[in-house]
Image (tube, rainbow, N blue to C red; front, side):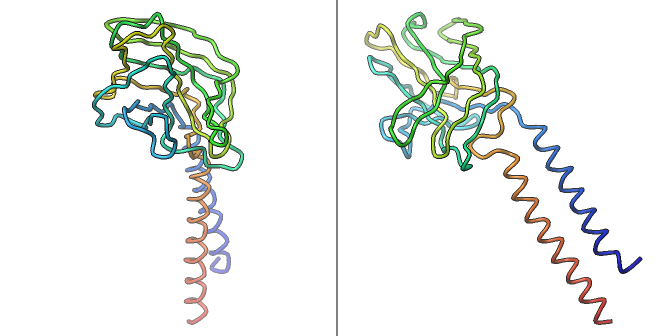
Length: 217
């Protein structure tokens, strides 16, 4: 039995890694990005949105020029990142009561041309404006964000007047991805593959050390 110990251990390790990987990928879920009144660190002329609830204060003026919020990081895999069809939730707290003149779009920021590309297949499935909070459920088809491009939200004011803003304080304005989110900007599957490779390497090292010790005796 001893001569098969290394092979058996390797099989157990691979099975364990596959189970962990399957569990992690199956549990990919929605992500929320809070809109910030902070210029994006990498893309001038745009605002930054950050994953999770973060300490935010201030607001952003939305005048005659649309405002773009970009994810902190761009898509990392060479093949880009694909969001399958699903619903996006957008929650904006507005100053000035301009909800009827507000247009929101989810899409991709093309880093090479510095342009916003709205998702191609979309539909607003619900809309509500209560106590200055603008809530939109926005359905999009399957969309791929190319490598080095950013997930983006564009907010436009169609008939702007002074004092119309998006409030950011306390993370009250945000965007949430579908439940099928693969884990932008780095898919969970890729993270698991890298982790698995590391564990396999560790398993091989341990097995080699054990065999070396056995041969020495």
